[in-house]
Image (cartoon, rainbow, N blue to C red; front, side, top):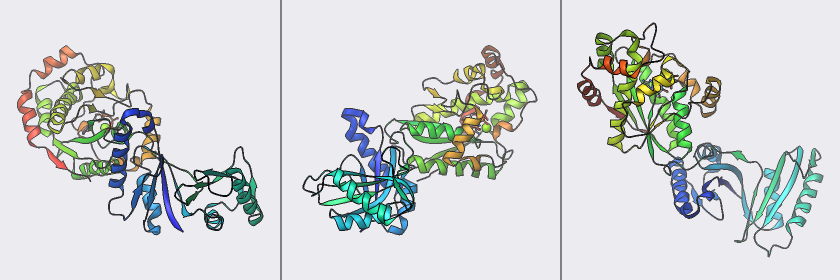
Length: 385
Ligand code: ATP
Ligand code: MG
């Protein structure tokens, strides 16, 4: 009896004419997620079947596949010849020992001697006499034992549904550049946009030696965690120390964050252009801190010439963001206590509602182009997958 994993996908069916394309991208992403593990993926009908793997690695395969966007649910089950004896053996392996259950059969092969209802009744009855702690509940069972009789003379038997990551396959919605700090918010923002099918590249700013190597490694770790969902994620790392020093020297103290943000956006747009990204993504949430007011966003948006800036967390509370960070597995890394460049030279009283005209006037004291050139020249690339 062969162990198999059944993968059901979501939303793809909505895409009409593009369906073939979406399915191909999804298939490629699953293949990529399973690289290094022997397996075959087939597409019998409206779902995917992972077969021919080492059974000891089934759990690892499920863990990897459930993170692939587009995955709705997964089940671990068995593929057996469509005959009562073999089906029963498989049912014994997947069915629970106790609680409420029902049997749900599906007969694609009409030559199978029993109708679905008869098969349900027979298997259900045998289970009841075999396992006294089981009870039937056809309306709201705790477990459903599924038997799919297929046209090729085989049957799939499975029970539990494991929840997948949902969303759309990464690569079907273009490419965006994610401003990735070491904080809680930006990894969550990236995850949300990738879930809509967007390929991500990361961009991180550091102020070495004011920020240390551990701070940078933390961001690289976050990029690696995100990469498990996105099928790889390159990370660009850019030094902005000289920009902060110049702002510190030539501009009003309270404008440090406001002005730095404008440099970040300019660098992001240039980097996006050179790597083919079509938008800038940030982890900003309205009103969360002094720099995230609508005036702050106006000031940083004003230097972006062409690309949309996506802020998926704009309407989220911190508690909601933290819950998501825990769910996707970035929280523990995000809370490690290393400094971000935004906390270097942090003014005592940052501007809460920066006035664009005043910001531009203050910025006129700087040689913006030269500062940008120096930052861009410092770009390093860290590849993930
Ligand atoms: P986060 O938790 O994502 O760090 P935050 O609440 O700390 O967010 P800020 O530090 O004000 O907020 O940053 C707002 C957004 O600006 C971040 O979500 C991120 O997208 C971007 N950003 C901030 N610092 C950096 C950095 N060092 N490198 C790249 N992007 C950054
Ligand atoms: Mg931060």
